[in-house]
Image (cartoon, rainbow over all chains, first blue to last red; front, side):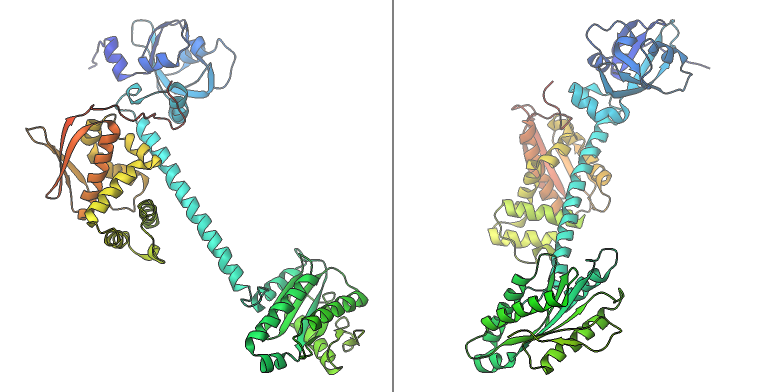
Length: 336
Length: 171
């Protein structure tokens, strides 16, 4: 058995504030209070309110409405605010016209903003306010989470930097050097060749013994300054213990250029020496050419061998190791 | 969500000019509030009421609260939806259920089930601030396991303007 119901316009307005009652030809009979807010003031027919969502030419809106089968979802855009899409459905109430009812779907918050809608524009059954509530709540929570993530990322970067830094001089420490060397030897992101300089201060023990450890620490800081002045921004300087330093100098180097730069470093360190302590430095240098990407340890060992060559030759000088597979290190004495 | 609660309390205590001790973010929210109450020399319930009122002054939270009722009476009568609304946003915050009843003399009784007493103080501060916001005149009295609210004039003053859309201005 079927029931028939007669509803006054007031009841229709409250149940379906976005309804639209039209004739078969598309002429508007009446509309719900919220729908009236969306309509241009002098709208006569549905074509004045809507365009088809798919953007078909004018004249097809009524066709789309009449062509909708029961249960079909109508999607129509507002003619004067095409970014707003309404969805709805149509029934034939029996007096010959058509009764449509609409909702905003995902265009809701844009529509509320565009038409200044309020709670009373929605039927109590609609979830419009809950949807807007959720949208704002989510945005607020997400902003907070993004803040947490930024905070965590910065904390991690700080920790990483600290783990790679020598606290006394601010240079890289051994761990930082390992990371820098791994990058430098990586054929994909590498520097395209570099020189590895191993430096050991001469007579450093004298400073500690005669002037105390504070003076020793000060000297190490001064040496860090000297080294910092010599290198360029893409080079790296590390202190890997006591009075041992390592430099990574990017680029292709000739023995002459390396000897020149090594000599400048030695001069700088000698100038920083406390009165009467005779501080100088011995350097051993290897070139990256010929080393595989995983040969970090071998490279450091070879630089160490070159360094001891300098020490054996009488300190205060530079030795550049020959390319691997050739003979022993080739000592080059720095001009005094 | 624990982080969000802690951060809220940190911001609140900062606004109250309570200095935060190092490592305070490792404390439970309750401990942070008890320490702060001691520092300010006021009862902890009073501080939690202030927190409730402060929440209403935070723009994002204020907007979410105003979605919950078109006037103060409507807000009160839908207060029992609040825990469910909070669960819509996050489900790892345990919020006590809120029950409402009206006595014959028109008083509204709000009962919180099984929650720590702090919730009652928080709600009390929040409701006082919301009454102000809606321009309503009311008396809120804490009682056994809840609050008694007497709304004497729900439109005593103009409500603060609220638009459903955060982008909208008066049409």
